[in-house]
Image (tube, rainbow, N blue to C red; front, side, top):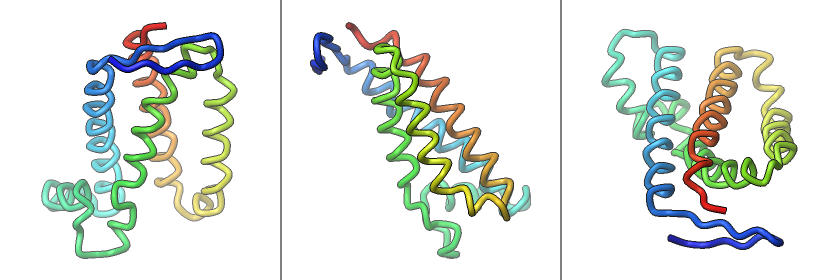
Length: 138
């Protein structure tokens, strides 16, 4: 158990919370990789393509340019969002998603599938954060 104090509030994070965040991160990575694999390659050779995409080891460098960075950002969101939810700081979550949206907006004008994956990824993180919130002790 580890504690964080913010202003007048103290929060206790358990090992159960930490392990749950890691499990949810991998699960979301698996779902998002499946969506990306189907969008880029179809279902032909799905599992071999999926594994290379999941591990970011695909020989086509254009397909592996993420190198798990979105998963690391998602992990940080899964740690921070439940804390913000328990503080009822929904505006902070909305602001962060607005910044992420603004930065990537131009790329989505030509590739609607990546925009849909962005929406799905954010929805999964927010839903998982709502489920993880009860694991934080105030």
